Length: 368
Image (cartoon, rainbow, N blue to C red):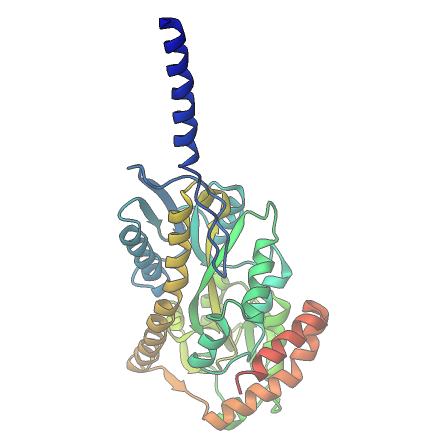
């Protein structure tokens, strides 16, 4: 009899254990416009997860400020369960090597430039005059369901192991053209901002990118491929008369002693990506992984606000240093943008394809 009772108790215990197991099913995956988390672990434990975030600059640069602000938000929203350690100033490698490590899963997060070396389609961010001011830039880039963001995101995420996730973007400000100190400008401001006026006696540096050369030539200048590391000396010695590829803040910090003027062409806004390694997110409990992504999405708007103010400060710093800052009027800006779309955009169909250019045109038209 005792053996029968013991057997019945054992059977009951099996049913109790099965019932308890059924009540702790893993949470369903959650989705945003940027990602679907596949982790099914529970965040109910006291375990603390540490993520490494690489960036290419240091504070007070707004890109670095954004990374630290994001890290603070993640710590707050997760109740300290996720800790983000920020590594500034290329401590974990330059942006190309960091991107590859994201794809391998050996770096978790990065706030860095995107390189078309991994996919030429990443250069869609360099198409000139998609927008003309900060409000339009927000409308284009903060719309994660918009055509440009989705194209940029897909171009980045299709590389290698397809382990890189674009959570959002951080602006680097509008770019202009700075003029070397000993260069004489024989053109009116109106002619400088008129693409149809040839200014071929002015040799303007551009990085070794097809789109960059198209922009310089389209604006009426003579283009000259030159790396950034060679630029300071080239401006100082008169090898080039000016430079494409920098905003007011960068001109002030890097080139202020060798330039005399900055023309605010605003042909494009440099964008940095907020990257995550998908495999790193998958190691987190699903709810914590989603918080990381949501914090990045929310950080975008803060980064845009900060960089707009930083850009204004850059203009003032140039002026205070004795460097002339020349702005186009609203009418000149609109005319220049329209003309550059007619001059340069048709050349981009071979680079990006008709579907891409048609989609971008439609999104730009939607701004009006």
